[in-house]
Amino acid sequence: MDKALIIKKIVEHKKQPNLRYQLKERTEVFTNLLFYTLFDIDTPVGLNLERLEKEFDTLVNLACWDTEKPCKKVWENYVQKLPEILKKLNLDAEATVNCDPASLSIEEVYMAYPGFYAIAIYRLAHELYAIGFPLVPRLMTEYAHRQTGVDINPGARIGNSFHIDHGTGVVIGETAVIENHVKIYQGVTLGGLFVAKHLQKTKRHPTIKNNVTIYANATILGGETVIGKNSIIGGNAWLTDSVPANSKVFHTPEIKIKTQSNVS
Image 1: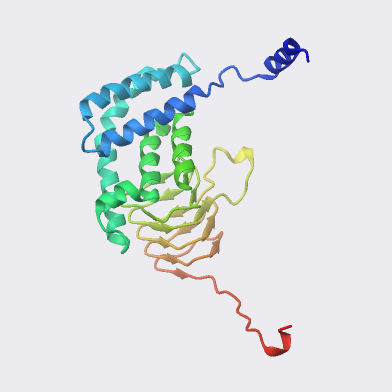
Image 2: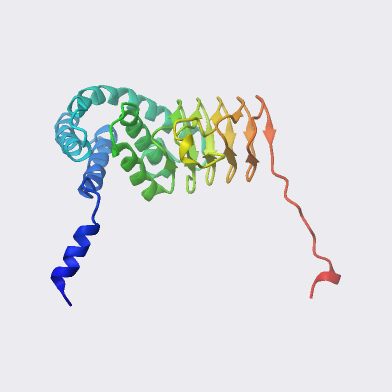
């Protein structure tokens, strides 16, 4: 075995000069620090904000490959938004404890509900996405995805008092718009009707209006698809067209009862 030749060939095929997995690892550290800073009562906020600033500076050095972009100015603007993000997340937690009869306390929601955790990381990532900070917002939401099974693209726009019950298998696409007081259940997909690279700059995912409930495994596709306010979308429904306000949409299963003649 010619070890030097093997090394040479591997190096030749490592073609991405900015591909440093340290960025992924440091993003996860940053995300955990953010979550504890906002929610853990024993975590000193002032001390952690100083730690977060240092971690963010590391992310800037790893993620901002275009030196002309003023990434170092991002932190000052971002940290000012944290109180408002926390305010929204408290509304999300209250929505969950009010919606789910299985919740025993609001503390349980903050600590044990995967849907809430995924929403929290989404909201923290979304503000960085909105200002165009590279890669880190997606790494944050993918970290939450890996832990919870909930895949929310940081580009989605989500209003107040959002509740995800159970969570596993939920997919919310980049250009989805979700208004206030929306409830969704496990397995729901808010996706694109077509998958093509030239559609990158277009609205590809649906709009969900106020007070909509979407039950388990429903699939809603398309950038022009709008689910009107106060509507209920039943489990396993498949929608590619808009639904008026105050609608109920249900998937009706076909039921066949076995008879003695067709039982072997």
